[in-house]
Amino acid sequence: MDTPASEVLVPLIVFTAAFGMFYIWVTARHRQRMAMIEKGLATAEPPSEADQFRSLKFGLLGIGAGIGLLLGYLFQTYAMVNGQDNPLPYFVMVAICGGAALVGHHLIVRRQAGK
Image (cartoon, rainbow, N blue to C red; front, side, top):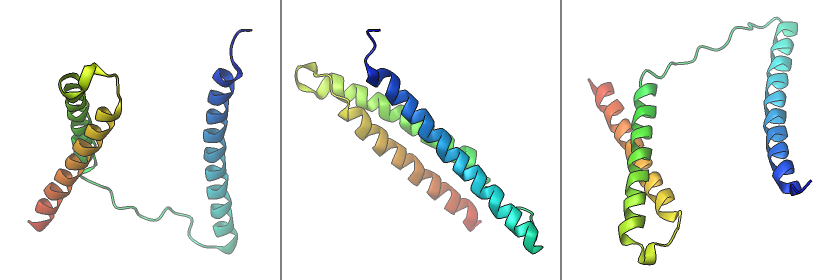
């Protein structure tokens, strides 16, 4: 086999870690519920307030990330010296535009709550 060990081990370790965290979360939740049943407490889930603006938030974040990728491409293409292949403009522009989209979401929700 000509495959380096890192090409096999790294994905295996990442998958194992993700599976382990999920398993611990599920078992801890199950133990907590069983303890509540033994003590005679209510086992119903606490009511969670649904975010009625969730789709707006994720939509604006997706649009902001897309615009950030476009601006990163334009910045790398036209502003970088010698056309260097550098991923930094992409990360910076996605962070800036995604953050601006979340701030815009906050302003929209605050305006709606004020009515």
